[in-house]
Amino acid sequence: MNYQILIADDETEIRELFRLYLEKDGYKVLEAASGPEALDVLKKESVDLAVLDIMMPGMSGLSVLKKIRENSNIPVMILSSKSADSDKILGLDLGADDYLTKPFNPLEAVARINSNIRRFYSLGAKEKEVLELSVRDLKLDTERCCLFQNGTEIELTSVEYRIMVLFMENPGKVFTKQQVFSAGWQDEYMIDDNSIMVSISKLRSKLNDQKNHYIKTIRGLGYRLEAS
Image 1 (cartoon, rainbow, N blue to C red):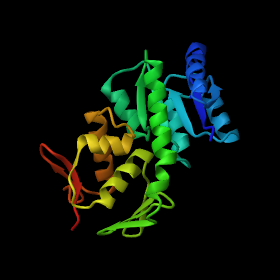
Image 2 (cartoon, one colour):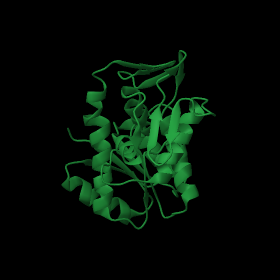
Image 3 (cartoon, one colour):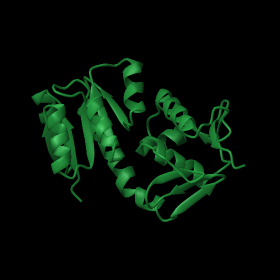
Image 4 (cartoon, rainbow, N blue to C red):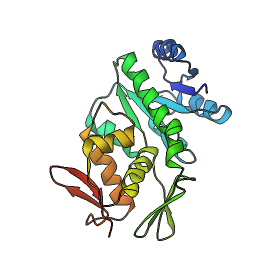
């Protein structure tokens, strides 16, 4: 399958660089030079993954991300010259799956895109073999990729969904940060402690889990979903 990747960046050189490397890997590249143009592409085309620059004319990449998350959970990577943790946290908090800081290595960028595509579309089929996972008052519909708590749907990003699949397939089992990162971000060779902490914190907030009765931190080891 030829996946379509949207590259939204107001710098022509950046878009051309992505196109050069991605087309070598067999992807079809769609381009946008502004936020509104990116939204227009998303409406007209079937986009499988989006790379969004934060600083774009007309509408920021974060605003575009918000619009995407209103009705889609496709993988989204944020691209920015800003390297402050606060910017990364904001992007992840809004539902981004990954973050690239300019200047970047194009080979690493393509590797991250490959990883997100592979996990979200290829390995996702394995997750759907079991149609529903249940732990206490949580139910995960793996056919619709929806989480319910006491019958009420909880909206998840694609990263949060994959983490919950990992936990709910193995309630009571302790997972290392590397295992959580590998499942959530689809990268077996990297780890970002800050991204993990942000996503676990967001999951706890969505589960109203102030006392960590659901997702337990096991000091020095990792995390587990409490089975009872």
